Image 1 (cartoon, rainbow, N blue to C red):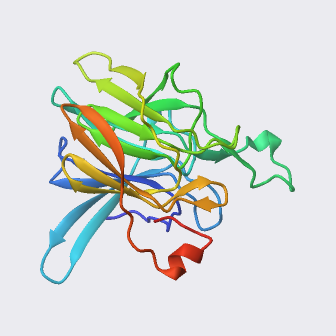
Image 2 (cartoon, one colour):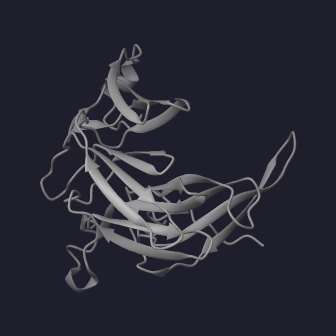
Length: 255
């Protein structure tokens, strides 16, 4: 009873714990590039059906969305926030193809930054709402996102409009009362300039950022530790590994 899940490139993924009618942990997959180089706006929910010593069986279902549906995109992020016993998905950033009315043979695959809207997605009912926050001026692509309870932290990213990787650090707080959600954004100090990096948790309060780019043709060879204490975020450099020659001279560097 699973749907077809195409081999997507650059989708946004996250884990979703619990929820009405769900069992255990689920995995949310949104957007990305399809094998024919088109962009997907679909959302998939993957869950574990059975697990034994030799294999894990998954079930994948496509989730229909209504309301302010995020346009097809890649290089974005999706995370889950938890507030007052409720949960919501948060979609932000990424890139999309230019509008179909502007696409010509020469510019068919030309991409542009998505609008800097924050989408709240209710996974249970499939409702999506877009929010415009004045602090977010660019729909940053390939940023780093960290979800902590009711807050999403956005680090770095790349803006096609300005061709820069600003040292961004935003916190997007989502309050989920019984009525309408409340979404706010705060600009924090101490951000880093990075895009296309890999984020790995080492504990509940600590993460490591590896790889990515700091300039168009300059790989980011340093690593960072992101730690949380009393709901305050701190980013500091850590001693990088002794990179092998293959890594040092590689042109592509996604961690």
